[in-house]
Length: 340
Image 1 (cartoon, rainbow, N blue to C red):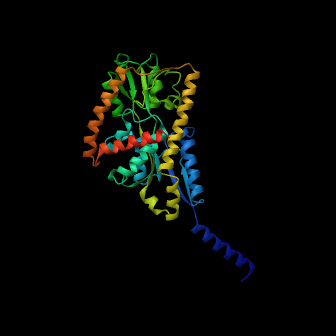
Image 2 (tube, rainbow, N blue to C red):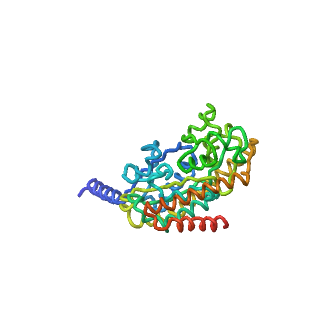
Image 3 (cartoon, rainbow, N blue to C red):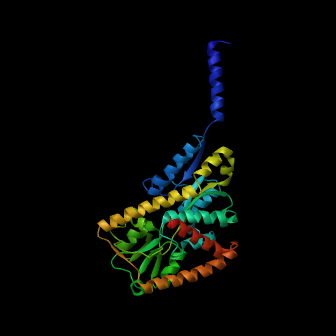
Protein backbone atom coordinates (compact mmCIF):
# COMPACT_ATOMS: atom_id res chain seq x y z
CA UNK A 1 0.00 0.00 0.00
CA UNK A 2 1.38 3.38 -0.98
CA UNK A 3 1.53 6.26 1.47
CA UNK A 4 -1.15 8.07 -0.53
CA UNK A 5 -3.47 5.06 -0.40
CA UNK A 6 -2.88 4.66 3.31
CA UNK A 7 -3.75 8.29 3.96
CA UNK A 8 -6.92 8.03 1.90
CA UNK A 9 -7.93 4.86 3.73
CA UNK A 10 -7.29 6.48 7.11
CA UNK A 11 -9.25 9.57 6.15
CA UNK A 12 -12.15 7.42 4.98
CA UNK A 13 -12.14 5.57 8.28
CA UNK A 14 -12.14 8.81 10.21
CA UNK A 15 -15.02 10.03 8.09
CA UNK A 16 -17.06 6.95 8.93
CA UNK A 17 -16.31 7.44 12.61
CA UNK A 18 -17.34 11.08 12.41
CA UNK A 19 -20.54 10.13 10.63
CA UNK A 20 -21.31 7.65 13.38
CA UNK A 21 -20.89 10.45 15.91
CA UNK A 22 -22.75 13.04 13.80
CA UNK A 23 -24.96 15.43 15.65
CA UNK A 24 -28.73 15.23 15.62
CA UNK A 25 -30.20 18.55 14.53
CA UNK A 26 -33.71 19.28 15.80
CA UNK A 27 -35.77 21.92 14.02
CA UNK A 28 -37.53 24.47 16.21
CA UNK A 29 -40.47 26.50 14.92
CA UNK A 30 -41.02 29.83 16.69
CA UNK A 31 -43.58 32.47 15.78
CA UNK A 32 -42.21 35.58 17.51
CA UNK A 33 -39.62 37.92 15.97
CA UNK A 34 -35.99 37.10 16.67
CA UNK A 35 -35.81 40.28 18.76
CA UNK A 36 -38.54 39.08 21.15
CA UNK A 37 -37.37 38.00 24.60
CA UNK A 38 -38.97 34.56 24.25
CA UNK A 39 -36.57 34.01 21.36
CA UNK A 40 -33.47 35.72 22.78
CA UNK A 41 -33.82 34.89 26.48
CA UNK A 42 -35.59 31.51 26.48
CA UNK A 43 -35.23 29.64 23.19
CA UNK A 44 -31.63 30.58 22.42
CA UNK A 45 -30.30 29.86 25.94
CA UNK A 46 -32.22 26.57 25.95
CA UNK A 47 -30.67 25.60 22.60
CA UNK A 48 -27.23 26.40 24.02
CA UNK A 49 -27.97 24.30 27.10
CA UNK A 50 -29.04 21.33 24.97
CA UNK A 51 -25.84 21.47 22.94
CA UNK A 52 -23.72 21.74 26.09
CA UNK A 53 -25.57 19.00 27.97
CA UNK A 54 -25.22 16.55 25.08
CA UNK A 55 -21.64 17.60 24.29
CA UNK A 56 -22.75 18.72 20.85
CA UNK A 57 -24.47 15.48 19.89
CA UNK A 58 -27.87 17.20 19.81
CA UNK A 59 -28.34 20.75 18.57
CA UNK A 60 -31.39 22.90 17.93
CA UNK A 61 -31.92 24.81 14.70
CA UNK A 62 -34.41 27.62 15.34
CA UNK A 63 -36.01 28.26 11.97
CA UNK A 64 -35.85 31.85 10.64
CA UNK A 65 -39.61 31.80 10.00
CA UNK A 66 -42.42 29.82 11.65
CA UNK A 67 -43.64 26.67 9.92
CA UNK A 68 -47.26 27.54 10.62
CA UNK A 69 -49.59 29.97 12.37
CA UNK A 70 -49.34 30.28 16.18
CA UNK A 71 -52.43 28.12 16.89
CA UNK A 72 -50.96 25.31 14.76
CA UNK A 73 -47.77 24.86 16.74
CA UNK A 74 -48.81 22.02 19.03
CA UNK A 75 -49.96 20.07 16.00
CA UNK A 76 -46.79 20.93 14.07
CA UNK A 77 -44.77 19.13 16.73
CA UNK A 78 -47.23 16.26 17.16
CA UNK A 79 -47.20 15.47 13.44
CA UNK A 80 -43.47 16.00 13.03
CA UNK A 81 -43.58 19.01 10.74
CA UNK A 82 -41.23 20.56 13.30
CA UNK A 83 -39.29 18.69 15.96
CA UNK A 84 -39.83 21.28 18.70
CA UNK A 85 -42.41 24.05 19.00
CA UNK A 86 -43.79 26.35 21.62
CA UNK A 87 -47.21 27.93 21.84
CA UNK A 88 -50.28 28.82 23.80
CA UNK A 89 -52.79 26.24 25.04
CA UNK A 90 -55.32 29.10 25.03
CA UNK A 91 -55.42 28.98 21.23
CA UNK A 92 -57.16 25.58 21.37
CA UNK A 93 -59.44 25.82 24.42
CA UNK A 94 -61.70 22.89 23.55
CA UNK A 95 -58.73 20.59 23.00
CA UNK A 96 -56.96 21.59 26.20
CA UNK A 97 -59.88 21.90 28.61
CA UNK A 98 -57.70 20.37 31.32
CA UNK A 99 -55.52 23.50 31.38
CA UNK A 100 -58.25 26.09 31.96
CA UNK A 101 -57.81 26.13 35.74
CA UNK A 102 -54.49 27.96 35.35
CA UNK A 103 -56.08 30.75 33.31
CA UNK A 104 -58.77 31.81 35.78
CA UNK A 105 -58.43 34.86 38.06
CA UNK A 106 -56.06 34.83 41.02
CA UNK A 107 -53.69 32.05 39.86
CA UNK A 108 -50.66 34.20 40.70
CA UNK A 109 -48.52 37.09 39.52
CA UNK A 110 -45.09 35.53 40.13
CA UNK A 111 -44.45 33.94 36.74
CA UNK A 112 -41.60 31.78 38.02
CA UNK A 113 -43.62 30.32 40.88
CA UNK A 114 -46.65 29.90 38.63
CA UNK A 115 -44.73 28.18 35.83
CA UNK A 116 -42.99 25.75 38.18
CA UNK A 117 -46.28 25.04 39.98
CA UNK A 118 -47.93 24.36 36.63
CA UNK A 119 -45.15 21.96 35.67
CA UNK A 120 -45.49 20.03 38.94
CA UNK A 121 -49.26 19.91 38.48
CA UNK A 122 -48.88 18.69 34.90
CA UNK A 123 -46.49 15.94 35.98
CA UNK A 124 -48.75 14.75 38.78
CA UNK A 125 -52.12 14.95 37.06
CA UNK A 126 -51.83 15.32 33.29
CA UNK A 127 -48.65 13.70 31.94
CA UNK A 128 -50.55 10.56 30.89
CA UNK A 129 -53.58 12.43 29.49
CA UNK A 130 -54.21 11.22 25.90
CA UNK A 131 -54.58 14.83 24.72
CA UNK A 132 -50.79 15.08 24.98
CA UNK A 133 -50.10 11.88 23.04
CA UNK A 134 -47.59 12.34 20.25
CA UNK A 135 -45.48 14.95 22.00
CA UNK A 136 -42.92 14.99 24.78
CA UNK A 137 -43.52 17.94 27.09
CA UNK A 138 -40.29 19.87 27.57
CA UNK A 139 -41.75 22.69 29.66
CA UNK A 140 -44.79 24.77 30.47
CA UNK A 141 -45.24 28.40 31.45
CA UNK A 142 -47.53 31.19 32.54
CA UNK A 143 -47.50 34.95 32.02
CA UNK A 144 -47.58 35.96 35.66
CA UNK A 145 -51.05 37.45 35.46
CA UNK A 146 -52.94 39.46 32.89
CA UNK A 147 -54.38 42.85 33.83
CA UNK A 148 -56.68 45.63 32.56
CA UNK A 149 -54.95 48.39 30.61
CA UNK A 150 -56.97 51.44 29.58
CA UNK A 151 -56.14 54.19 27.16
CA UNK A 152 -57.80 57.14 28.85
CA UNK A 153 -59.19 56.54 32.34
CA UNK A 154 -58.80 54.59 35.58
CA UNK A 155 -60.74 51.35 35.93
CA UNK A 156 -61.46 50.90 39.61
CA UNK A 157 -65.16 50.09 40.03
CA UNK A 158 -67.68 47.96 38.14
CA UNK A 159 -69.15 51.21 36.81
CA UNK A 160 -65.79 52.04 35.24
CA UNK A 161 -65.95 48.76 33.31
CA UNK A 162 -69.51 49.16 32.09
CA UNK A 163 -69.79 49.23 28.28
CA UNK A 164 -66.04 49.60 27.80
CA UNK A 165 -64.85 47.92 24.61
CA UNK A 166 -61.95 45.68 25.62
CA UNK A 167 -59.65 43.59 23.44
CA UNK A 168 -59.54 40.00 24.66
CA UNK A 169 -57.61 36.90 23.66
CA UNK A 170 -59.76 33.88 24.43
CA UNK A 171 -63.02 32.50 25.84
CA UNK A 172 -62.02 32.85 29.50
CA UNK A 173 -61.17 36.51 29.02
CA UNK A 174 -64.42 36.93 27.10
CA UNK A 175 -66.47 35.52 29.97
CA UNK A 176 -64.71 37.71 32.53
CA UNK A 177 -65.35 40.87 30.51
CA UNK A 178 -68.99 39.97 29.92
CA UNK A 179 -69.49 39.37 33.64
CA UNK A 180 -67.95 42.77 34.43
CA UNK A 181 -70.25 44.56 31.99
CA UNK A 182 -67.64 45.27 29.33
CA UNK A 183 -67.88 44.57 25.60
CA UNK A 184 -65.23 42.00 24.59
CA UNK A 185 -63.55 42.47 21.21
CA UNK A 186 -61.64 39.40 20.03
CA UNK A 187 -58.32 40.27 18.41
CA UNK A 188 -54.65 39.27 18.72
CA UNK A 189 -52.39 41.57 20.75
CA UNK A 190 -50.62 42.59 17.54
CA UNK A 191 -53.83 44.40 16.52
CA UNK A 192 -54.29 46.27 19.80
CA UNK A 193 -52.54 49.48 18.77
CA UNK A 194 -54.49 49.73 15.53
CA UNK A 195 -57.78 49.12 17.36
CA UNK A 196 -56.95 51.71 20.03
CA UNK A 197 -55.94 54.31 17.44
CA UNK A 198 -59.12 53.70 15.49
CA UNK A 199 -61.37 53.97 18.53
CA UNK A 200 -62.56 50.39 18.11
CA UNK A 201 -61.52 49.54 21.66
CA UNK A 202 -61.09 51.53 24.87
CA UNK A 203 -58.87 49.09 26.71
CA UNK A 204 -56.98 45.84 26.26
CA UNK A 205 -56.14 42.82 28.39
CA UNK A 206 -52.43 42.01 28.60
CA UNK A 207 -49.75 40.92 30.97
CA UNK A 208 -47.76 44.00 31.98
CA UNK A 209 -44.73 42.97 29.91
CA UNK A 210 -46.93 42.53 26.85
CA UNK A 211 -47.89 46.21 26.86
CA UNK A 212 -44.20 47.05 26.57
CA UNK A 213 -43.22 44.30 24.18
CA UNK A 214 -46.07 45.06 21.79
CA UNK A 215 -45.11 48.76 21.99
CA UNK A 216 -48.43 49.86 23.48
CA UNK A 217 -47.01 52.02 26.28
CA UNK A 218 -48.03 55.28 24.61
CA UNK A 219 -51.58 54.08 23.98
CA UNK A 220 -52.29 52.33 27.30
CA UNK A 221 -51.39 54.51 30.27
CA UNK A 222 -53.81 53.36 33.00
CA UNK A 223 -53.11 49.97 34.54
CA UNK A 224 -55.53 48.23 36.90
CA UNK A 225 -53.53 45.65 38.85
CA UNK A 226 -55.74 42.84 40.16
CA UNK A 227 -54.03 41.03 43.07
CA UNK A 228 -53.26 37.51 41.88
CA UNK A 229 -54.00 38.49 38.29
CA UNK A 230 -57.25 38.94 36.38
CA UNK A 231 -56.45 35.96 34.15
CA UNK A 232 -53.45 34.11 32.73
CA UNK A 233 -52.43 32.15 29.65
CA UNK A 234 -50.84 28.70 29.62
CA UNK A 235 -47.92 27.88 27.33
CA UNK A 236 -46.10 24.75 26.20
CA UNK A 237 -42.71 23.80 24.79
CA UNK A 238 -43.03 20.36 23.19
CA UNK A 239 -41.04 17.91 21.09
CA UNK A 240 -42.30 15.30 18.67
CA UNK A 241 -42.49 12.04 20.64
CA UNK A 242 -40.93 9.88 17.93
CA UNK A 243 -37.98 12.24 17.61
CA UNK A 244 -37.58 12.23 21.38
CA UNK A 245 -37.58 8.44 21.54
CA UNK A 246 -35.13 8.34 18.63
CA UNK A 247 -32.45 10.11 20.65
CA UNK A 248 -29.80 8.11 22.46
CA UNK A 249 -30.77 7.31 26.04
CA UNK A 250 -27.86 9.33 27.41
CA UNK A 251 -28.92 12.36 25.39
CA UNK A 252 -32.54 12.05 26.52
CA UNK A 253 -31.34 12.00 30.12
CA UNK A 254 -29.09 15.00 29.55
CA UNK A 255 -31.89 17.01 27.94
CA UNK A 256 -34.42 15.96 30.58
CA UNK A 257 -32.13 17.37 33.26
CA UNK A 258 -32.32 20.86 31.74
CA UNK A 259 -36.00 20.64 30.75
CA UNK A 260 -39.19 20.08 32.69
CA UNK A 261 -39.10 22.09 35.90
CA UNK A 262 -35.80 23.74 34.93
CA UNK A 263 -37.11 25.01 31.59
CA UNK A 264 -40.44 26.05 33.15
CA UNK A 265 -38.51 27.99 35.78
CA UNK A 266 -36.45 29.72 33.06
CA UNK A 267 -39.67 30.70 31.31
CA UNK A 268 -41.09 32.24 34.47
CA UNK A 269 -37.87 33.99 35.41
CA UNK A 270 -37.73 35.73 32.06
CA UNK A 271 -41.37 36.83 32.24
CA UNK A 272 -40.72 38.20 35.74
CA UNK A 273 -37.70 40.12 34.46
CA UNK A 274 -39.73 41.60 31.61
CA UNK A 275 -42.52 42.53 34.03
CA UNK A 276 -40.08 44.47 36.21
CA UNK A 277 -38.61 46.19 33.17
CA UNK A 278 -42.08 47.22 32.01
CA UNK A 279 -43.09 48.53 35.43
CA UNK A 280 -39.96 50.68 35.56
CA UNK A 281 -40.68 52.03 32.08
CA UNK A 282 -44.30 52.85 32.89
CA UNK A 283 -43.40 54.52 36.18
CA UNK A 284 -40.74 56.65 34.51
CA UNK A 285 -43.25 57.58 31.80
CA UNK A 286 -45.85 58.81 34.29
CA UNK A 287 -48.35 56.00 33.87
CA UNK A 288 -51.01 55.53 36.53
CA UNK A 289 -51.56 52.31 38.46
CA UNK A 290 -54.89 51.51 40.10
CA UNK A 291 -56.21 49.00 42.61
CA UNK A 292 -59.66 47.52 41.99
CA UNK A 293 -62.35 48.53 44.46
CA UNK A 294 -63.84 45.89 46.79
CA UNK A 295 -66.92 45.90 44.55
CA UNK A 296 -64.88 45.16 41.43
CA UNK A 297 -62.93 42.46 43.27
CA UNK A 298 -66.21 40.88 44.38
CA UNK A 299 -67.44 40.82 40.78
CA UNK A 300 -64.19 39.20 39.61
CA UNK A 301 -64.39 36.64 42.42
CA UNK A 302 -67.97 35.78 41.48
CA UNK A 303 -67.17 35.08 37.84
CA UNK A 304 -64.04 33.16 38.86
CA UNK A 305 -66.09 30.90 41.13
CA UNK A 306 -68.67 30.42 38.39
CA UNK A 307 -66.05 29.47 35.79
CA UNK A 308 -64.23 27.16 38.17
CA UNK A 309 -67.41 25.24 38.96
CA UNK A 310 -68.24 24.85 35.27
CA UNK A 311 -64.67 23.83 34.49
CA UNK A 312 -64.68 21.02 37.07
CA UNK A 313 -67.55 19.38 35.20
CA UNK A 314 -66.02 20.05 31.77
CA UNK A 315 -62.66 18.65 32.87
CA UNK A 316 -64.29 15.51 34.24
CA UNK A 317 -66.02 15.06 30.89
CA UNK A 318 -62.63 15.49 29.21
CA UNK A 319 -61.17 12.66 31.29
CA UNK A 320 -59.48 14.44 34.20
CA UNK A 321 -59.96 12.20 37.24
CA UNK A 322 -60.19 14.86 39.96
CA UNK A 323 -60.13 18.42 38.58
CA UNK A 324 -60.77 20.05 41.95
CA UNK A 325 -57.80 18.25 43.52
CA UNK A 326 -55.61 19.18 40.56
CA UNK A 327 -56.48 22.86 40.93
CA UNK A 328 -55.91 22.68 44.69
CA UNK A 329 -52.49 21.10 44.11
CA UNK A 330 -51.55 23.91 41.73
CA UNK A 331 -52.63 26.63 44.18
CA UNK A 332 -50.77 24.94 47.05
CA UNK A 333 -47.62 24.57 44.97
CA UNK A 334 -47.83 28.18 43.85
CA UNK A 335 -48.27 29.45 47.41
CA UNK A 336 -45.26 27.43 48.58
CA UNK A 337 -43.04 28.59 45.71
CA UNK A 338 -44.17 32.20 45.96
CA UNK A 339 -43.21 32.25 49.64
CA UNK A 340 -39.65 31.10 48.98
